[in-house]
Structures are given as C-alpha cells and as structure tokens.
Amino acid sequence: MSSGLSVSGLEFRFGPKQALENVSFEVPAGTFCALLGPNGAGKSTLVSLLTRLLVSPDGAIHIAGYDLQRKPRAALAALGVVFQQPTLDLNLTVWQNLSYFAALHGLPRNIVSQRIDAALERLDMRERAHEKARDLNGGHRRRMELARALLHEPKVLLLDEPTVGLDAAARAAITAHVHDLADQGLCVLWTTHLTDEVRDSDHLLVLHQGAILADGQAGAIRGTSSLSDWFLSHTGAAA
Ligand SMILES: Nc1ncnc2c1ncn2[C@@H]1O[C@H](COP(=O)(O)OP(=O)(O)OP(=O)(O)O)[C@@H](O)[C@H]1O
Image (tube, rainbow, N blue to C red; front, side):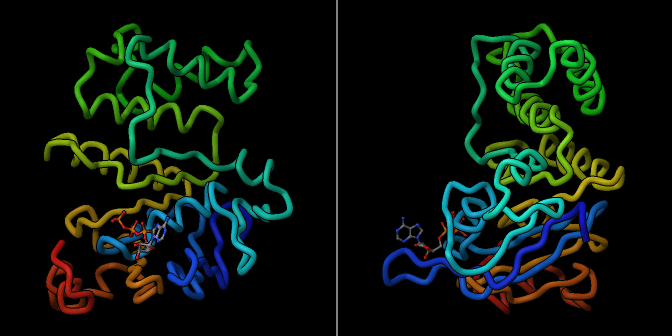
C-alpha cells in the first residue's frame, strides 16, 4: 500500500505508563478512517507519533509509502494535519493565512494562488478569502485550517478531534467535507471520541487503554447495537 497510512507494532511509554501497546493498522487511499477512543485511550500520543512530535524506538510508521523514521522529510511532506488547537493568525485574512503557510512549505510562488483557490473552492470558502480569520465563525475557521492542510497536496490527512467546540451544523458540515475528500482519493485519519461522527461505511479503529480494540467497517463492528451502545459496553465510556 503506497499512498495510505501504515502503522505496525507501535509502542510508546511515558516512564512507567504504557500509553500505546503493539498498535498496528492500515488505512488505504480513498478511505475515511475514524479513530475512536475514550479520554486517555492514547489518541493524542498516536497523533504525536504520526506527526513526529514524539518518536518511538518500537514499531514503524509509513506515510504514503515513506518510512517516517528513515525518510522523515518525504513522509511529513505527504501528510496534512489539522491539529486540535486552532493555529491561525486571527489578524490575517484567510488568503494571507494560507499564503503564509504555503511559503513555509516552500511552495513555488507561481502555483500558490492556484493552490489556494483550489483549496478554498473545495471547501466552499472562496467568497471568504479576504475576510479576516477573526471575523469567521468557528466552523469557517476549521474549514480554513482544512484548506490550509491541503495546500501542499498531501496523500494522507490527519485530523485530531477537529470538531471540538463546533456547533452541530458546523460539525456535520466539516464531517461531510472530509468524507468527500476521502471519496476523492485521500487517506483520512479522523480522531474523535464522538460516535455520531462515524458512518457505518467508515473504516473504524477503536483505541482503548493504548491498544486497538476493534478494526473494521463501522457497521460490521457495531452489529445490531448502536455504535454508542457498543462503545459503552466495550470501553465503559459514554460517547
Ligand atoms: N506527558 C505524559 N506523561 C505521562 N503520562 C501521559 C502523558 N501524556 C499522556 N499520558 C498518559 O498516556 C495515556 C494516553 O494519553 P493520551 O493523551 O494519548 O490519550 P487521549 O486518547 O488522547 O485522551 P484525550 O482524549 O483525553 O486527549 C493516558 O493514560 C495519559 O494519562
């Protein structure tokens, strides 16, 4: 699998605390994969390892076929990230925020405008290009961060609880947008602790106490229960 995400035998400890234990999974291109886990399951630790904020001696991560340990630049160049905490400059316009990020990524000047237009178009944000980030509502700020994460045309998109703080309508809109991106061929890993963000057709990974508890199609995993009932009975956590 060359254009997706592959994790094998990943372990991580914070001192005596085993935060991740033998975590292995694969997310092919064109797949929306929800990584669902209760608080403390290890989601943030996994995100930190995937973005190389943390490094583990045990296990392997391949992003679009590149080994993150051996070819970190190539692997990270193929990764788009939407972090849990917003990282926008509120005093800049949408366009300025995006072009600043494009410059940081070293995108050639002659393609920047075209890439920004395309990214904003994909997210129905073109008419807001010249508004200041400060004047956008929470949902539009999130969409702008998503547009920014797509500028360098990553193969794999990682979103860390991207709907935190959004109202129901904005949550539904961004969830639908990201599903569309997966339908267009992107490999998406979406971390959440909310079962209502997961569709039956999604690939679902359930992380519990640092280990993968379930890996498969969400509808098949939940069976005849609702996903929230399944989650409660298997993890003891409401979602
Ligand atoms: N810096 C740290 N030092 C020690 N233990 C930590 C540290 N960071 C996380 N942990 C522990 O590692 C485990 C996994 O934490 P992690 O933050 O990855 O979970 P999470 O699924 O992201 O939870 P949340 O949704 O609450 O952020 C937890 O038991 C947590 O207490």
